[in-house]
Length: 390
View 1 (tube, rainbow, N blue to C red):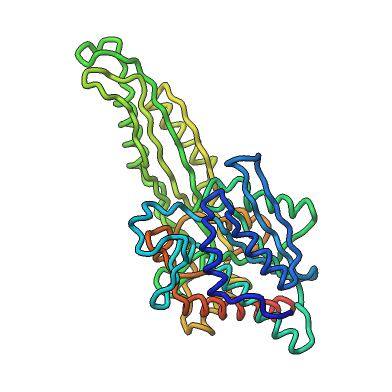
View 2 (view 1 turned 45 degrees about the horizontal axis):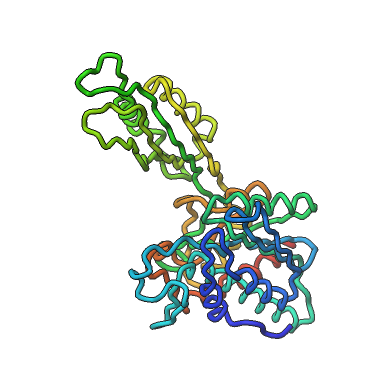
């Protein structure tokens, strides 16, 4: 196996693919060429009907034996916002003062490149001693993490289960570090519930309210009850659950009409004191009391989960400490990730780049951080296949 890429140039090549969910824009083609050059067997896994719902994904595997280590990530990115606000075009992958600028630089194309760099060096180490990978390494790469997450990792895992393929442990390369590499490893995530409620009333003139029912009054009381109720005080492993009202829409342009309906949306990020079913029951109870006549749609995109500290988090923590000199915090903070699906298959933790610029204008990654992360990933591979086989 000869060297097939440079992690800086691979990061830039991926950024140049404008893969805003659900578009792939060639990003997975770039990675498949690299992976095949590293002797991985690759499978392209498109899911969803043709059109805007269709998502392309890539599964790659090197070896078949245990222990089975999986690295999961995504090549899709969020929209750029107003391009004129960027100091460097978001898909040109410009390099300036040791930084690579572009959408996806830290979330999470740079991390994928860093991991492949680690895999290449790991293989070279083994080749130098006439050894092969003492187990198997897989990559689970989706194009649907930033979007609905319907036709990505979840369906890839279903495909793998149907084939009888399993993992022993998984590392997700999300940007987990607030300020510098070595800050934080994610060992779980809060769940996420989105709700939309439409309160129905009886339209009428504001001056003649007999027989008129204001949906706005009912909605305001409902939202006040939802927002003022403390869900919990947090736990040893999780921050407190919180509810945020994200939208109130009435669409009434007249000043003398009580509207027929009023609509609101809210999100709950919840810890393991709750689950989607218990929160849905609580919400419906409040809607019954305050809204009376209403429509309610609830979507639970992921339940809260925790990977208890143990072998996997110990290996990642030790690798981070060895390379950076910092002992990372084990955290469940932040938003959701595809780890919420993977936790049903095997223990999973997350570690990647610095999150400071993710989803922002002028998202960027330091070349030195790419190289340092690749060193950490290499150390994880070294320690994983040494310790898990014992």
